[in-house]
Length: 62
Image (tube, rainbow, N blue to C red; front, side):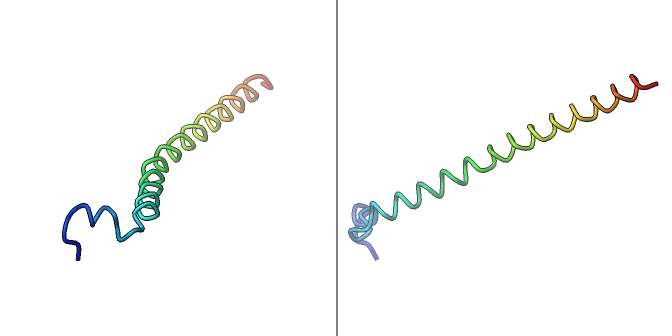
């Protein structure tokens, strides 16, 4: 138990490690959904281009 909020945030001398670890995890939790969304959009755009290219090829060969 901590007697004050200052002791809590100091974490018994391990504050730098604890808070940096917490911050790194929080950053990953925030950035990962953004990265997934960007990859998803890229994949969808690539698939749409492939479908359009196939449709163009089919029309051109007729």
